[in-house]
Image (cartoon, rainbow, N blue to C red; front, side, top):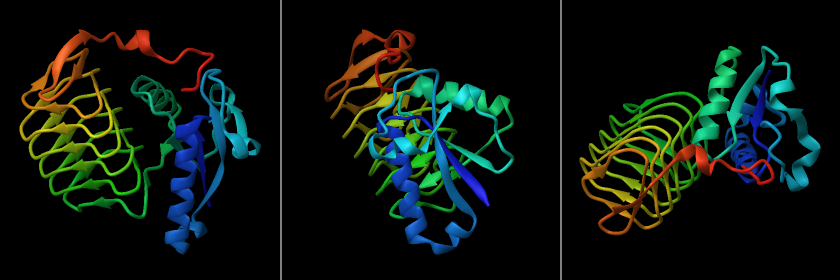
Amino acid sequence: MQHIVIVGNAGAARECYWIFQEMLQADSTLSERYMFKGFLAWKNYPGNLKDLTCHSLGEATSYILSPDDRIVIGIGHPYLREEVFNYFKSKNALFFTLCHPLADINPTAKIGEANIFQRGSSVFCDAILGDANYLNGTVNLSHDASVGSFNFLGPLTLLLGNCTVGNKNSIAARCTILPGAKIGNNNIIAPNSVVYKGCGSNARMVGNPALKIASYMPEATLPCRNMQP
């Protein structure tokens, strides 16, 4: 029996818990192989597990991994997703990909590890998706789209054919990345934005067409220790 351990102890972690529960309900054979073990806090960020607080396992960096543990990164912030991924990778941990029963992954798509596919998300033919991305509901990766690692893709985001997205981007709800557009790393793209040709790295992009309104320093926007990650 393999044990699912969710790293994170706030809203995104609770979402991951319920995705896993719906996976079990949709496929009874999964419950013969996997069971939920609990939540791990990440570096003292305060929790908000609500009714799931009883499943807390303490602090991630104090936790002793079991060979049967499978790690889910239940945190939305791209930089923290990368931090958690690299930490557990250094411990030779194995990861678990959450895929809601109402998500759809084409068999020709190339998918990395530790990704999360919320309800209604689709990855179409020959798309590429790296590691530890969070597709937060009805995200559409069209044919030949290429997405790196540690990105947060908000609900109802469309990434159309042959577009390219780098690493650690935060793309908000209802954004559209048009065919062939190229986006670098560490960008924030505001809700409802439409990216035509793309952008470089470390930019805040807003509007239709999306324009750079400011530079973005990712380290400065990490959640404070007294806030939920």
